[in-house]
Amino acid sequence: MTSNRKCLHQSSAVLFTAQWTRDKNPPKKFPGQVWILRNQESPHAGWSSLVTFRLPQWKGMFNWTMDYRKDADIRSPYGIFKKLPQPRKRNYTDIVSKKKGLVSWMVSHCDTEGKRELYAKKMKTFVPLAMFGGCGGRGCLRSQDEACLREINRHKFYLSFENAFCPDYITEKFYRCYTIDLVPVVRGGGNYSRDLPEGTYVNTADFKSVADLAKYLNYLDKNDDKYIEYLRRKDEYEVVFDDFFY
Image (cartoon, rainbow, N blue to C red; front, side, top):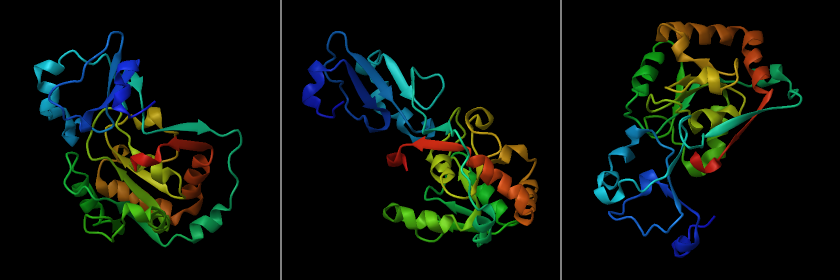
C-alpha cells in the first residue's frame, strides 16, 4: 500500500477517502483497476453532498465501497471484539473505590444531527455530569489524550453518544472508552445488541425516558455488585481499533 500517486498506473486497486476527495476530474483509470470509495463518517458529516460526487465525470467510476456499514463491499468498522481465552482477573472492589464521579462526557462537536447535546442537557437535571472538551467542559486536547482518559476513568459511566443516527454507525466514541474501567452509555443508530458484547454497556434506547435512565445509573451507583457485573463482563473481551480514528 502506498500514498504515492506516482504509483497509480501500477496499482491494482485505488482507494479514495470520500470526505477528502475534492478533485473535479478523476485521475486516469487504468484497465483492470478497482476503484474503492472509502468512508468512515456519517452522511451528516457533509461529505455526501460534496459537488465532486455529483459531477458527471465521476459517475460510474467506483467499483466497490469500503465503509462501517454492513452492506459495504469491504466492511471497515471502527472496532471489533475478540473473546479472550480466559477473562481478566482484577480487584473490582478496589477499582470502584477509586471512582470520584458518576458520569463523564468528552465532546467538542456541540450541535449535532442526532441532538445528543439536548439529551445530555436533560441528563444533567437528574445526575451529575462532568464534561470535557470544547462544548463547555474542562479543556481536553487530543495531545493530552492519556491524561484526559485518566480523568474520565475517575467516573463510573461515560456517554458514548454518536453525533447522528445512522445504520451500523458505532464509532471510536464507544471503542476508545471501552478500554478503561467504566461502563459506556450508548446512544445512536447502530445495532448494539448485534455488534457489541451483551452486558458491557447501557443503551439509552432501553429506557422510556431520560429520567428512567438516570434512575438506573443511580441504582448501579448504589449497588456495587451490579455495577461490577458490567466490568467483569467487559473483561471477557479485547477490543481492537485504530488509534488514528480518535
